[in-house]
Image: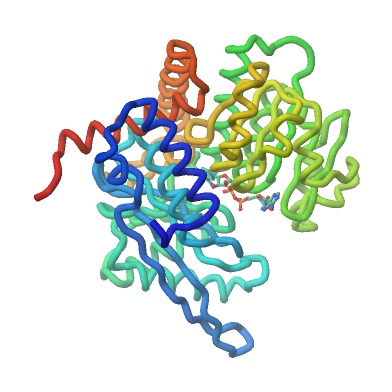
Length: 418
Ligand code: NAD
């Protein structure tokens, strides 16, 4: 479909085609499974603080509606495009199905640089976006959550704008909102915590448990920072981390507490005095036991896939590895892959818990949330590992196969209207 033309969408389609071939999905069913059900592009005029009017582009894509409402994050980043959002929505579908959640996938975004907008400008932009997509969203239609460049505050503005429109408070319209507004305990930490849990499981699987275990994390936002702190709690030494401004490396291990203080003061991990500077490209090639890309798509490519030096590649970001890189990694059995739709599923799993709690107005303790999270992750991990071993296929192909097959079966059971 021409409107989704984008390298990330082509990548998601290539992955789908591989799975469809393996599952022998008939040609006539493929387009129905692959292409988003619906998508909306909106122009968002706002007043800048200096009085000027600027128009931003916003998108929301709902991939399939077969199993329930759609669910997915909202991204604020200059490179956001409809095709990228469509790819992220497709991955959300397979991720929700793999975890057994009653959702289809969705994603949204606004092409903007949030660091160059003031808080009041961000609020106006978020409220205007919400207003434009109100006919398209709802607690039983499509539920947003934070992603790159958005956070709890963004979700609070969306919830408020939607609630003002309906005339009563609707916490279940978004997840990842502040706990004081009906957010779930443990949601902010869920994705990174889930990443660390699965890395721990992978370490057991490949018997990586002697001596000092080291990790490198690209992207030190919500997911990357929580993953790093959680890994450190498991006793892993964090050698390097980065963000969009650059990275920092210390062969003896970074002091994460001091690094966080530096980040809070400077707004970036770059320039931290407890290590040496390293570029994002160099960081991916550092020797380590665990490599965690936790920033953006297409970081591990045909150029660097042969050169990464880790035992576990834990894809905390969505789509960090291109299909060309996958082909190279398939020839490197010494690297154990935790594919994105499994690795970062903790976020949407606890978002699902938040939605359930909001619908029931009955809230759980953080221990209940985390226990239930780990139970679902464990099930998805074991199913993926067992299929991968039984059929001698990569962990990515196994995870995608489980997700795609569940959506295919649901579509077959429901039939085709009219
Ligand atoms: P975030 O905005 O909190 O953090 C993103 C981090 O990546 C920041 O440190 C940023 O500086 C860095 N970054 C941006 N561009 C970069 C670049 N070109 N090179 C290196 N670093 C760069 O976002 P997040 O919520 O932590 O999301 C990170 C990844 O995890 C994304 O792929 C997102 O889709 C995925 N994810 C997030 C969640 C969630 O719950 N937030 C859930 C599932 C998946």
